Structures are given as structure tokens and as C-alpha cells.
Amino acid sequence: ETPANPCGGERRKVALGFLYTYACLVSSETDFFVANEKRLLPRKADESTIKWADWKQLVRELLKNHNPNDIHPRFPHAQLCLSRINTIHRFTHILSFDPHIRSWHNYDSSLFRDNLSKIAAATVLVALVLTAMQVGLATEQLQGNADFQWASYAFTIFAILGPMCALGLVIMGELFNLITDVPGILWDRMAQ
Image (cartoon, rainbow, N blue to C red; front, side, top):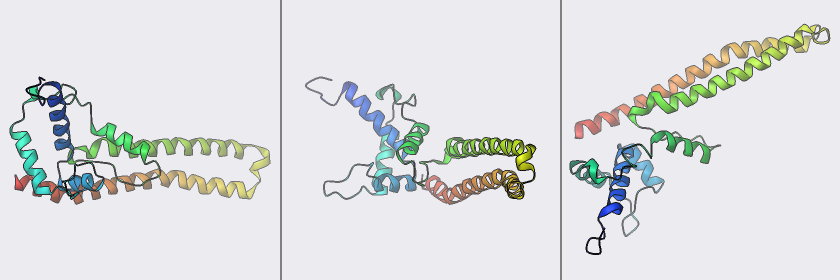
């Protein structure tokens, strides 16, 4: 970076790396609309959003002239990766049911793994409760208690069916996401 060339050197490498990261993360029309809606992409001077066709043209030019040596080293080495963005999103939207930021290559990774880890944690909790109920049924005070026996029976049925139903819902959700995104993926590939 010199006074004659203020856009060179380290700043240029960081800017190109940041732009390259955005180009990789906003790779489908759905991602583009979400990024515009969340104001993650810059606006024009009149505050209108960038059009999809303009974004695709910019990304094509960026990728056509892409040289890894022109990008700051922190960007190609996954300093800003999808799993970190999803983790940040989860902690900033704890009570929200917004979908994860996802891309076509991420179906079997973080979203699926996160849902299965929640099911596994819930199953461990249910197992602890069932163990406590089993101990309760072994005591004389609760052995003859019809309400406690009925509650134990109902919770046992829930413990058997709950994890299987939850796993089925996760699989159906993943299939739904895949089916809804496949046309966009195919459309993007045909447009290239």
C-alpha cells in the first residue's frame, strides 16, 4: 500500500477475501434474498437492493479473475466458515425458529448433526427419569400407588416412541429442505 496506490497491499487482500467469502456464502438465489432481507449486502445509493442478475455478474467476474495469492491468508483457511455462522445464529436467536443458514453441501453436516445431538440429549434425560421411576416402583410407598404406576407406564411409552418420532421429523425436515432446494440448485447449474 502506497500513497500512489491506496487500494493495494493488505487492505486489498482483506477486501478481496471478504468479497470472495460473500460470493461463496451467497451462492444461490435463496441465499441472495435472505442476505438482502437481513441487509447483509450493500444497498445502492437510493437504498434499493442489488438485483440477482447484478450479483451473479459480480461473482462471475470475481471468480474469473480469482487468484488465491491476491486474497489475505485468513480467508481461504476457513476463518469464516458456515458452522461458525450457524453457531453464532443459534446463540443470537435462541428462541427463534428461523432455519439455519445452509447451502446444498451442508445437508448432512451441521444442521442434521445439531438436531441429532438435541435428540440424543433428550433421550439421555428421558433415560434418567425412567431410571428414577424404576427406583420409585421398587419402593414400598410407590409400589401400590396406581397414579404413579400409570404415570410410569405412560412415560415409558413416550420414552419408546418419542426419540423415534423426533428422528423421523428431523429426517422429513431434511428431505423437505433438499426437495425445495434441488430446483434452485439445478436452475443455477443450467444457467452457468
